Length: 111
Image (tube, rainbow, N blue to C red):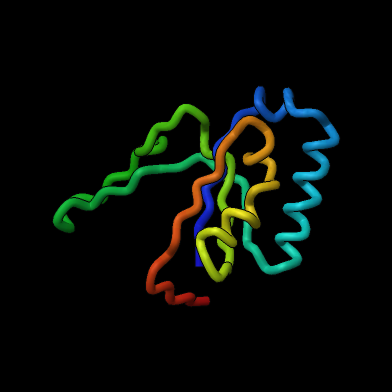
């Protein structure tokens, strides 16, 4: 199981040729049909409850990057290389952004 985090901004997306963007969105649809779960990122909050003493929630991301987080995907692949290949044509990959791929170890899916 792999978690992918897509980073990209509107300027990079808009500067990408429309045919490339259409190809990327069609590629994402094929990934969804394969069972990849993906979603755009909403506004995050930070949650802290140090030593179970005080629950605090603060707006905003804890991590900072040159590009904003655009979305997430959860996918099955046999290797990191396969996961990277599956994501190589996604919108963030082709529209002046980047996709991070994180292997999830000891994943226990609970519905």
